[in-house]
Image (cartoon, rainbow, N blue to C red; front, top):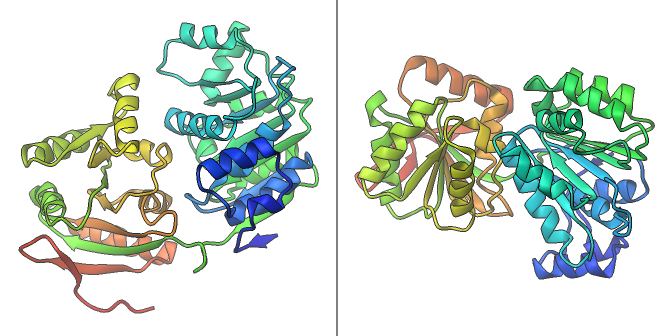
Length: 389
């Protein structure tokens, strides 16, 4: 089933408590992936959904999961697997929002980099929903600090990314252990061979939902490429931000060193910027992301791991300080802007011929129009030429 539009949430037969939580967030209309997935998952059917990033996948499976939870049952009733700790934290935050009026619904987020003792203490409170990265959930199962064989619903979020990262054996072992489940939901931006293999083995008569990034739900993102010198990337970002056209920005780099250099340069220029990457302690990473989510940080500089882990609706501009190595990473990066029907901009900084070749290839393979741009003295960008279709 291919979908291009959503329906009103009050037409989906949700509980008064769920509707109250949605109304509190001023949400009335579902996205296409939510309209496609909520009814079959409420009916305990398996689902495999292909949808672009930023289309509301968390609510698509989170709403049926929260609706199904029996607060009187203290066993694990649902398990959600995510590829990164950042995404796991984000999922948990969103589920807490929609479960706010369901008394007795408890959840836990399990991921590496956080003291395992703290997680064990939360598990002793008998949460019914477990959100986890595959590696850390496997650790807890080996320690016998959690039992997931009682799970009725299992969800693999960003399944393509999880399998690309080498979690396929962990995931299949976990699915084998959770063999009493009533339904399995798989959510993915791309349906790779590995994703299909898991679907064939572990799903039965799955409802297939595809949300095309057509004109109705494709983000409104103006994409530029700007030629700069290697040493001029940070200066260009600072100048554009100084121009006053943008309030909030995300900057993506390919290396940890680049994130540090760009953030420090922006700070020296008086731009409120901080960075995260794999060598920064988890607690600090969470603090920086939380500041950005709350609007207390203007520029967020990160390696690609954060592209999957932060969900903010009002990012005005995304900078590709380095052109990504993978086409799909480009799609995920620019998908941080132009959300919730807002207009967004993505600027890729091109400092050498290989980067120009990469951005041309990305444009061709992802069917995105990336326009050559020039920057004036005030940091304002304009197209060098009108893009062809």
